Amino acid sequence: MSTADITLDEWLRFDERAAAVTAEATARTVGGVVTSVRLHEFAGRTAYNAIIEVDGRPFAFVPGGHARLGFDPESWTPTDEEVLSYLGSCTALDPFPEYADLEPDDRAEARARRTDSTVDEIREHIAAITSRPRTAHVKAFLAATHADEAGVSEAPLDHPVITALIQKWKPGYQELVDDLILPETDMDTHGRVRFAPDGTPTAAWLAAHTTYDTITEELARTGRRLPTPDEWEHAYAFGARSLFPGATACRPDGSKTTTPLSCPTASASPRHRRCCQDCTWPRTPTSGS
Image (cartoon, rainbow, N blue to C red; front, side, top):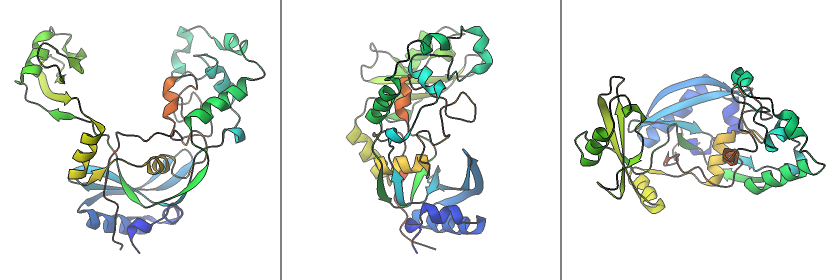
């Protein structure tokens, strides 16, 4: 059987040997090498995590199958902390509770703003940023474990843009340099410099403006592509059906999802309709063990 046909249900039943055999077969298909196969636990679920290095880049094997995707807000009820967060409380889902004493507790103020329609409003908000429940057939694929920075390339320290950045900042402030624009030098390019603790520049990059088409073309030349929305959600949720795949609820706990519902980044939930465009994949495995 082709490793591209391995399903999530099958993968969850694999022992270490079966996972390793699948990883080795996939690595041969894409011209890569298996660097690790280990048992990984996340959000109360346990499965083997296989990492395959292709052209120096690490990828994780993601089994496919008939994936249940999407989310039904009507079947979900937010916790009291989530409601208060939606109503503007910073304390309710404070990701840094150890510093809570430094800020006033605003939960009572938020609770006073709650009405009979608040939960319905939250459900409407969640419905607007998620897709409805569905089943999609997904082939097994390799997911990049590190995001690519679109348009970013290494640059020599004597490049004009980089030189201008280095000269622009006084010693002691150089570590603050990050993605600064120098229009007097290059209207179309950002520069980035990494400095040692003593202020010595050690590495530099140029980040030219780019387009979606350019990004996809560059990825295609290296045998990679962006994930489809279904692939992205399947890879992130890995079988979880909750709104937050890392937990059953949004909680101020280091081991749980902590993004407040009132925060704009909450729309980055894996149930979100849009595709994550900073993850890249090589070709789908096509041969089996």
